[in-house]
Length: 171
Image 1 (cartoon, rainbow, N blue to C red):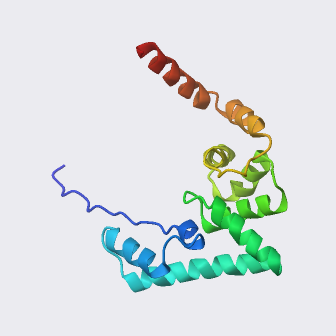
Image 2: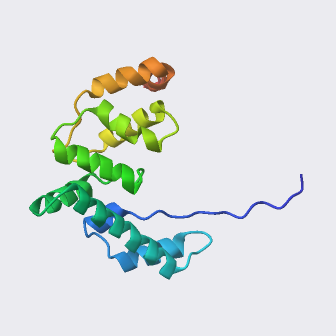
Image 3: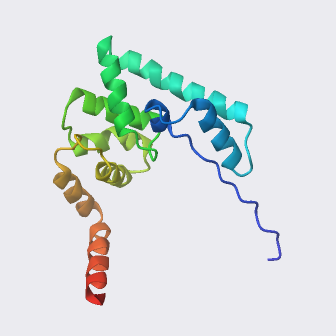
């Protein structure tokens, strides 16, 4: 077992949310990703990827909405953007909140199920997404989502509760 260590590989992912909110310029984001990924990437290739991603978002917004509604949809998308999700998943969530002010958490999990390994993973992703929703956005039936998670794997929430009990006992 004297083989040399594998080289470190770190590929940064773009923050389309920051691009949509105009918190960063596309050229700067491309340079940052290229420079701080290991090994370094070609900034022109990263820029092409970012441009293609933004074009995909624009195309989806045009397909989903019309006229003035497009601006509202893109504002919702920018506000909700969750870097842990793909472009497609973020578009699904934005569409849910565009169509309904308080969509069902279980409906959201069902929508992103196609992008996950299993339903439990989809439920947990929606749970994490819910925990960071900006003010003014909320899911309905989040308790039902929690019950569904618990019915699939009762150790998930039990583990968090046990940790809380252990921490409380130390104080």
